[in-house]
Length: 504
Image (tube, rainbow, N blue to C red; front, side):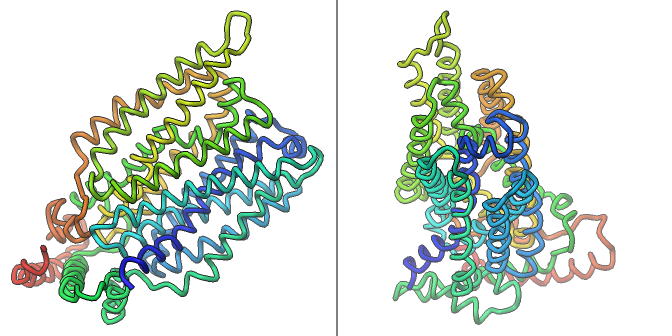
């Protein structure tokens, strides 16, 4: 089946990423519903709205961290299944809410599920991908996040056409979440487990069958055997020095470095400000003088633009240009666009308070431009880079930490403070992101991040220094360490005789 089956698997798994995008974007439309605001006695810029979005992001923090346990103990597929099931319960609570508490609990559960999905889907895709197409395969996660945003806004836009007294305008968009949940629950067990997880759990024969199903093109038997040997050699070496618990990620220097890379790319993605624009675009357009039905329409169009750029980037460019160059470009270009947006925001009204329509249009243009730039830089690359640089021994726990803390915890903070900041200081709010991008993100990517394009996950181990580290930290149990070090020496001798096979 080869590449076609690999793409089908990646797209289906990315239904979990679709939920990420839909659940994140749906509240942008819901808070625009007059019936929703009156039903819960709130306004679009209130702390209540911030709390609804923050509970979603907060739930995702814990969901991501939970994934560190389920990925290692149950595997990649079952973690995705658990996420979809939890999301289904959260969606039912939200769409049937009779009070604010039901909405908040439903958003927490939805966030919990999306946290699980956001860290497990890219790992599943990455471990199943061919090195030469891994950017495309994992980039599909970001593509489906964008599709989720598109569907959420157009479902919301259509639902808004009912009378203002009808709760259909917000209950139906929230109920729509159930559909992708049911698709995952019914379909995920028809797809194979990751070959690397199968080898790790001593199911080598099954892993070989999955590798052939994913990558066989009719003439590459030697490559598949070589890839299998490399995976097995690396996992055997890593097993020799694996220690239980989460502390080891921070005490082994090479693992700590790779964990730092994965966490930072998630933090830097949040600090572009893209989710602030995504969550609160209706408020931003209000500040530009675009209100009512026109506001919803512009929001809906905005969510279409990013995925179009993302699609062409992951299909034609990502696996060729690599990771670092697009990130550097994105950091600078997004900062410039936000500066322009702030300048327009400061001049969008004249001395009498009247709106300047030409500047309002320019303001919309630069918000759209941020989305386009993000979609050819941080959008897809954040998931690709974070999933591919983590060693197998800590891939579940490390990805859980990077996604939970770097993405969702930072996102939770911005979800809570952004509606207040946008309401109080309007355009000046953008300068927080500009300053961080230019003073922190840019120099870190330039001097610290490594290029990983078209390398196998096992070759990336070598890029960061050693295949399986060789030693454990001194403060681990002495007896256990001695046994493990002896196993490492044996593994090293074995690896020395397989250099040609291991590095191709």
